[in-house]
Image (cartoon, rainbow, N blue to C red; front, side, top):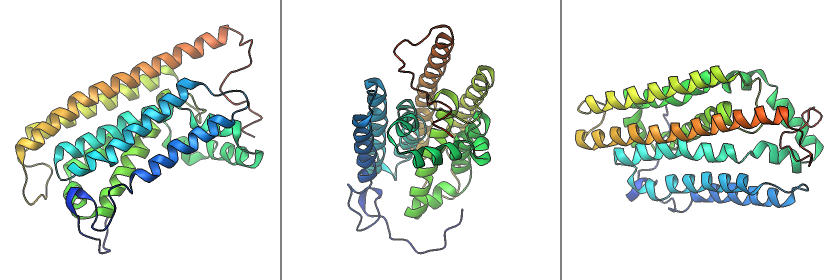
Length: 280
């Protein structure tokens, strides 16, 4: 991505000059508030654990764009933001099942539009675990192994665009593996586990390579700090292990619950998955 437009210089803490430090928190507050309003409108009663998961994801986003944004010039702050935006927060948001909630409370035209989106071929491709894993782990590798990291340090627009990429790719990956929401043509357990193992291995190799090459990576920096990048690589390695363990737990828990539902009739009629009629 090449940005030729002039951008405002960074003020202290990594925010563009003139931008209030609380401004990035506003969309997070909208996500949390909108979800709570929708959950309160669910005629069948929305599960509290879904709400807790969503709010935990929003809390992760708030930390990433709030306090950690003050460390955006520090590679440890950047990698901590990646862990929250690209791995931990997306898992909480996915487990909140926002699509299912939307299908419960939205009017029929909106539900039909969501159904068409879920059947779109492009989404089928992007939401495949292998594709989503490549977008997530491969996207981070592209940032750290090319001058893109250095360019993002100088251009706030690109900096924010990378954060949006981390969040979107992380959400797609978590959704494709363990999301309780309906997903287009979600493959079987073996494919999903393989994609998770592949992404985890790629993430670990990238962290080790960054640690070993901290004197030359990322390229293009004016004043590189090898020790800071070694610390960032360690944070990336161990933090990634934790995030991937949580994702694996969600994956196998969802698989187990789905198998149990096939053998047990839900007498209360409170299954969260929408019926085919809702998606048509």
